[in-house]
Each structure stands twice: as C-alpha cells, then as structure tokens.
Length: 130
Ligand code: T46
View 1 (tube, helix red, strand yellow):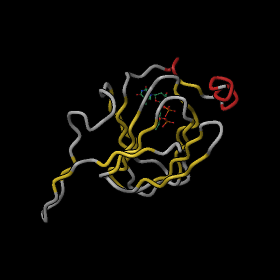
View 2 (cartoon, rainbow, N blue to C red):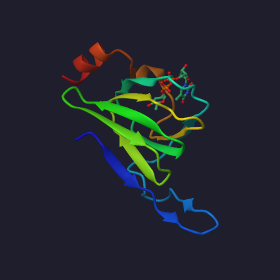
View 3 (cartoon, rainbow, N blue to C red):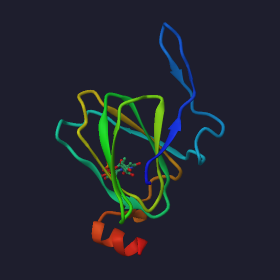
C-alpha cells in the first residue's frame, strides 16, 4: 500500500472551518511550502520521484488525481478535501493530473528545493529502488 493519509485537525464553525497543521501533525519538520495553482485543464505535473524528500499534498481548493508508483504497485487517488493530507515518501514515483478549475495543491516538504535530489526518468527510478 503506497497511500498514506493524515487527517488534518480542524475547528468546524457554521461561519467556515479552520484546518490546523502544527506540532507533530506532520511526520516530518516542514522546511519548505509551495503550491500549484492555475494549472490548465489537461496539464500533467510530477513525473518524478525523490531520493530522500518527504512531502504532504493537500487539495486546499478543487480536486486533482495523484498516481503513485513504487515499482511494484500503482495506485490512483483523487484529492478533493482540504482536511486530508496525502503523505508521499521518498522512493515513490508521482504523477498529478485531472486538475479541476481553481484547484490548488498545497505541498509541505521536508527539505529545501534541490534539483539533484530528483529522479526524473522512470527507468532511472526503477534502477534506483532495485
Ligand atoms: C512534486 C510535485 C507535487 C523550484 O525552483 N523550487 C521549488 O520548490 C519547486 C517545487 C520547483 N522549482 C522549479 C523547478 C522547475 O524549474 O519549478 C519548476 C517546475 O518544477 P517541477 O517540474 O518539479 O514541478 P512539478 O509540479 O512537476 O513538481 C512539483 C515538485 O517539484 C515535486 O517535488 O512532488 O510538485
């Protein structure tokens, strides 16, 4: 099983909800935050793995699909709830697609950006994890 979730604690209110990420809600210390937005319909993101980076993806608005591969199993999941975080550990190939209009993918990452830590070829990925 590749898919692993975090239920993000929230304070519900008829005037609107608050989802809170603090303390040990996440399985790692957050060292970078970024988000994908204005993704055109039909665009595909990802298509790579990380050697060490861990991330949590949250659909803070709209929806999109994430395909995860570990070399043995492929799983597809739709992210469409701002109170659910998808944990993607290192050594996991990810592809993001089917972004709805207005979708925002918030990403909490365990490390600063480092291009040398990406594996952008699926062939290399299979070699790396074998
Ligand atoms: C991931 C998915 C969900 C930076 O300069 N700093 C950054 O922190 C990031 C994330 C990207 N960039 C640069 C590197 C490329 O020149 O932005 C450009 C686009 O990056 P990339 O093609 O990697 O974007 P995505 O959406 O395919 O992937 C990103 C993350 O890179 C990746 O770790 O898991 O979002």
